[in-house]
Image 1 (cartoon, rainbow, N blue to C red):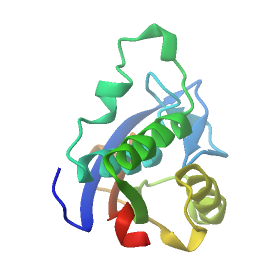
Image 2 (cartoon, one colour):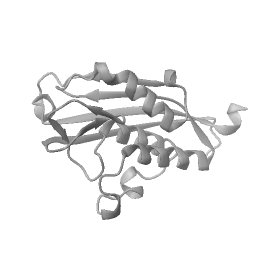
Image 3 (tube, one colour):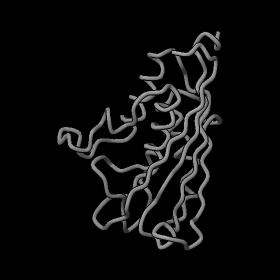
Length: 166
C-alpha cells in the first residue's frame, strides 16, 4: 500500500424507482410512493459513499463484499455496508477525512432530509457531521433520471493515513 498521507476516492450508484419499496437515502426513510429497487435497502447515496471509500484504498466495490446473489443479505441496511467500507479502510491504515456527495433525483424533494442524512452517515463513518457534504440536484428532465424513473448518487471522499492524524 502506498505511503501517501491522503487518498481520494470516487463512487457512483443508481437504482430504479419502483412501487412497493421504501425509499431510503443516506439511512433516512424518505416520504415517497416509490422506493429504490435492489437486493439491499437500495440506498444509492450510502452505496456511492461506501464505494468511494473502498476505491480510495484500491479495494473492490461493495458488490464484492455484499454480492446481490447472496440471499442471506437480502434487504440489508446499507449503513452496514458503509460500516464495512470504513472498517476495510481503517484496516489498511486510513480514516475518513470528509465525504462530499450529490443525489440526482427529479423527485421527491430531498432538501428537508439532508441534515438527518448527514447525522446518520457521520455516525456510521465515525466522523463529525460537518465533514459530510450532501447536495441534491435534478437531471433537468433529461433521460431516465430526468423522467423520474430512478435516483443516482455520486460521492468523493478524502482518506487520511492514521499516522497523519497523530
